[in-house]
Image (cartoon, rainbow, N blue to C red; front, side):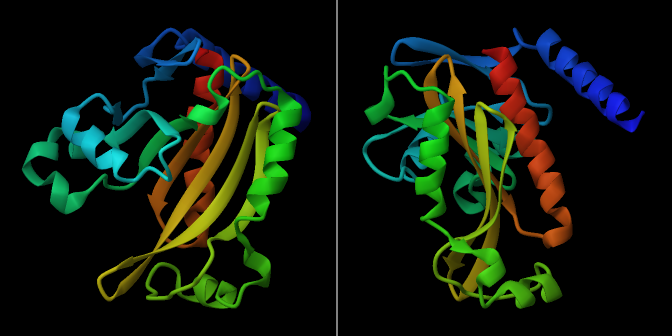
Length: 225
């Protein structure tokens, strides 16, 4: 019985998403396709704003990266011209992007499988890391430094979505800040798209909440396109 209830709930959630599939915050072009960036309650897709674009472009991994959208919290977006340089993008925020190297290139589910094996190599295994016990014991009240980002989990909500939960260490002055990031690879209209959901690390107990918010956008992107 529980199995059938879960199936009904999933279908109900997908029906809601489908009803909102034409409700785009913005529509962007990537090569030969258009991508609907869906509305997210409490957030604003605002990459077209000049100030947001200038700061987002500074965070590109390399010259091949193509940013398609930036979602900021409504309060951060509204106050951007008052204290944006002081507060940055806030938490959480979302970057939707791809790369010039895959523009117009056909991909399928097998591409995600191959790409996942490469992505795993970029991170250290959290379970084998020396900071695991410290992070779990002290939550976010911890000034700790570690080298490579730590891979907590790899999962998929659809054959067209691969997600990686990662802890990043960012140095700010004398302080080391831990950030929870969910990196996602998606297939939209047979093109390779990425998005990253960034949030402040507040302890292991809140990881599932971060994943849930991330997965909502991932499914919204699929259904809306």
